[in-house]
Amino acid sequence: MTTVVNNPSPNNERARGSEFVIGAIVFLIVVILLVFYGFPTLRRMAAIESLQTPQTPQTPQTPQTPEDNDGGTNINVPDEVDINVNTTR
Image 1 (tube, rainbow, N blue to C red):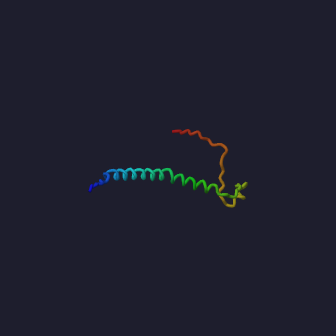
Image 2 (tube, rainbow, N blue to C red):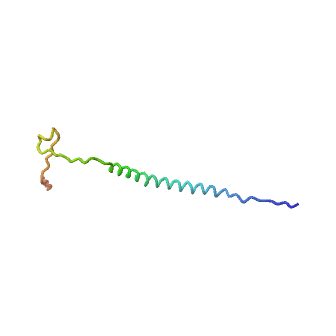
Image 3 (tube, rainbow, N blue to C red):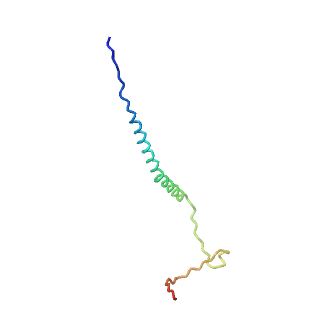
């Protein structure tokens, strides 16, 4: 009777360690890309959506006289501003 010996293939334990390290590095790169690019993009998209909500247009009504102002602040802006700065000593 003939004896057949089936030897198992060599088990390479070093490959599993390097696969884990490579997988961890790829995972960290994906997380970093998500943090730096994904979250700001989502925040901008949320801001754009809030700007696109339908709103009723309102026309601003400026008071013509101080009596029409109803007690608010009245600011007078001059037509010209002198920006020449001359210091005398």
